Every structure is written in C-alpha cells, then in structure tokens.
Image 1 (cartoon, rainbow, N blue to C red):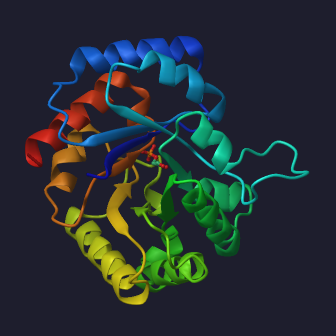
Image 2: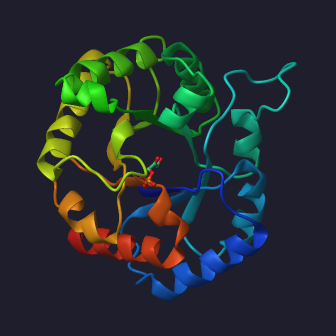
Length: 250
Ligand code: 13P
C-alpha cells in the first residue's frame, strides 16, 4: 500500500521537537496501522528522526531534492543522499518552492527523474492560485502542470500526486470535499490516459487539513490520503488524523 498521510514539517523542528513529537504521537496513535504514514522533516533531521522512530512503521522523506546527482551546486542535496539516509520518498514541486525558489515544471520534471532513478517515491505537488480558482481555471491549470512535469518523465515506476490549492495552504480554507473528489478524479484520468507507463499510486489532498475536517475529506472516494503542514507539527493531532483515516479505510 502506498503512503497515505504525509507530514510536511517545512522549516520547523529541532532535536527536542522531534523527541516531543514522537512522544505525543505514540501516546495518541491507536496502533492500527492500516495506512502508511510519512514525515518530511528538514533534511538535517532525517537521520535523527530515523533513530527516534526506529520502532514505529513511519517512513521518512525529504521536502525537496536537487535536480542533479552531483556537481558544483552549493547547498543542494541529491536523491541518492537522501536514499542513503533511508528516505522512502521526497516531496517535489511544492508551491512554496515554485514561488519562493522559482522552480519550474521543467526543473520539477528533472527532480522526478532523479527520485525515480534512486528508488525514492516522488510526491509531485500541484495546485491552482486563488485567482485561477475564482476564474474557474482549476482543471486547466492542473492539467498543464501535470503534463509539463511529466512529459519527459513518462516512465516513472512510482508516483504520488498531492493536490494542494495554493489558496488553501495555511489559510484555514479548503475546497468542498466533493470538489476535491472531482479534482482528484480528473488528476487520475489525466495521468492514466496520457501517461499509461507511470505507476500512479495515489492522489493526496493538502491544504488546511486538520482533525476536524479529516473525516469529511477521507470519506471521498478519490481522496487517497493527505499531505499535512501545520496540523502535522502537533504529534497528537497527526495521530488523531491517522486514527480517523484508519477507521474510515479499514
Ligand atoms: P497546511 O496543512 O499548513 O495548510 O499546509 C499544507 C501543505 O503545504 C503541505 O505540504
């Protein structure tokens, strides 16, 4: 089974935070691990988190990788490096990286290939802006992001897509669950029809997911899980969300 709930800790965390988070998570998680959980901490803490979470079934991943394998690229981290540290996955093309670090779909495509070459599962993030949403352009924008990111990476052995509307991230707003469901259906259709050689494992939703709205999202047929920012920083809340997921998806 593919990754279902993934915590994106963004630029947060410390060794102390990791310990406290693990305590809170383990205290509240009901242990019925029907889903596969993942955490993407800041890359510096991948190793530390691996040692803390040895006894639980949680995969660790990175929030980004470089588009090259080696070279004069100060500050970057490659897919093979995170693989060596035991990472199972990497988030790629998050909207914050697209906006703050000017990542293009072409760069994202190269990163997807790097991940695949190193048997790291890429979680490709796509999402529309508030304006694009208001002008009813969501489907077109997402389709274009998918096609541009995948057209030269059309034989990925595994892929997870995370639909994260930019306007829903950290805002407390989400599209209606039924709207998310139809977007996910469209994403699956586009990938399966245009890129039949890609092993699309699941489509996750991201953007203001929390314990309160989790069940309404997980009840949707095409929502295979979630990529969670703010609420995942609280080990207890992440555990409660995982419990909701497990109850609904047994
Ligand atoms: P929030 O859950 O804080 O809205 O963040 C979502 C996100 O960006 C996950 O990648």
